[in-house]
Amino acid sequence: MSDEKRDAKHRAAMEKQKASVDASIAAASVDRGVAILLTGNGKGKSSSAFGMVMRALGYEHKVGVVQFIKGEQMSGEELYLREHCPRVTLYQMGTGFTWDTQDRQGDIAAARRTWAVAEPMLQDPSYDLVVLDELTYMLAYDYLPEAEVLDAIASRPASQSVVVTGRGGGAALQEVMDTVSEVREIKHAFTAGIAARKGVDY
Image 1 (cartoon, rainbow, N blue to C red):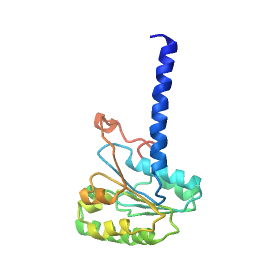
Image 2: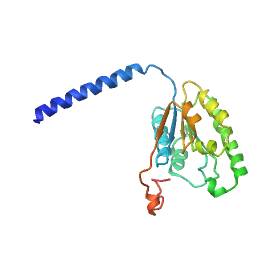
Image 3: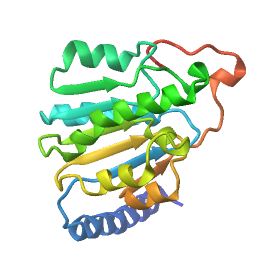
Image 4: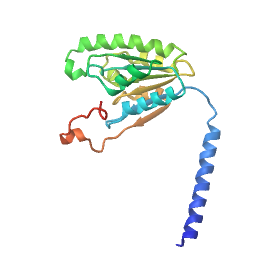
């Protein structure tokens, strides 16, 4: 095939794609906040959520971040937000991973205290974006009442967006969310004996 024919074929394909994209954009007429679930076994769920935090801050939006599980070890996100982003409200459960604490009742109490911070954010229309990092584990382990959490997400202010991260979370959570993305692990450096790296993994 000559370059001229290849170029013409490419142009026709792109015109068709543009028409499809333009039609989809025109059909998306509802203007409201969205609920996003980032789940799956792969790396990058929290990183994606913090990418949205940076995006929201670019528009001077008010952001709330509540981290379940994480918080015992410092992370780059925490260091940056506390130092440079006074518009971000950051709260961490601070107990570390459940396999470290090995204290179910203590973890439940910590989860309830943390949810008591998160729930008012989901009721506050001044927050444009709320990130509930690793919330799915709290539902999977029955640390928080699922119906209460799902109702808070579903009944949040119309203009507010919420991002939930973590593996699993259950079918009921997926049903409530507008967007569900699964990060699939193909390979991971840690399984090859490579230590977690500052600035990349935490």
